[in-house]
Length: 347
Figure: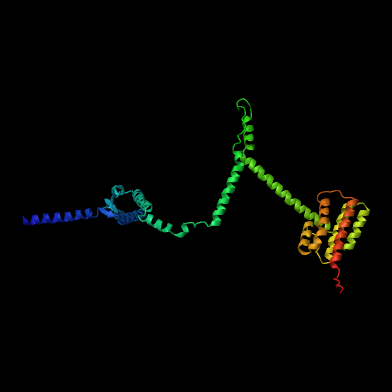
């Protein structure tokens, strides 16, 4: 009798011990949960490529990995393990390993997605530490920068006031499209041409055209001047003789130009002012003012006369040619007087 009670007590202890193990393992932490899910997934992957006893052993490993997990503890909160679906699939016959593997994979992806999106408890403190760096704080503007900022704001305000009337332009009011065929296209075109953006663009294009024409005109003048002077090199005397020959034939405009070239060549021969075909007439006067100021006074009226004849299309005849000869003679006399040797003062 005692032996039978002892046997019953032993069996009860064994059963209690067997039941107590899953109860102790029912609640797992998050790393253990992820590890056991990974083990189950790998075992199911191997089972799909095996057969017979090896396949059964892999399915059993996956079942053992999922067994005994009822809840998962994360910090101070407890959540369901959500493995009942995968276990139910593994206990059916025949076992659908692909479905079980898909269910375990979904659990793993969900846990990892939650881990990636879980906010860092110290994120605010780390962010404040980073933002305290001087690189994230713009330097205080100096007085010059403040003055430039105010000037830029003033310019923007003036431009806004200048173009503000254009904002009040309304498109023209036209009859109803139902009564006038094709009126929609006409209204759209008129509204476009009356818009402030079109007017501003048109004004910008006009300014660019004027600027390009001005630059082209300057280049054309310089090219014309170089072309006119691209003649055989002549001395000052040869230029004067050539001017007289042109005047005798009635070509007074070319004769005035030749007289002017003779004067420039004379200054170059005397070493006073270098002759350069690319230099403008005003540049000759400026160069004379900088180096030989006494030469600029008689040269300036001659240059004005040449500019009026060749660039302003002033009339040019025999009187103008005689005036050019007088200007050339005045320059020559000034040069001759300056080149005279100094005479000693009589005692």
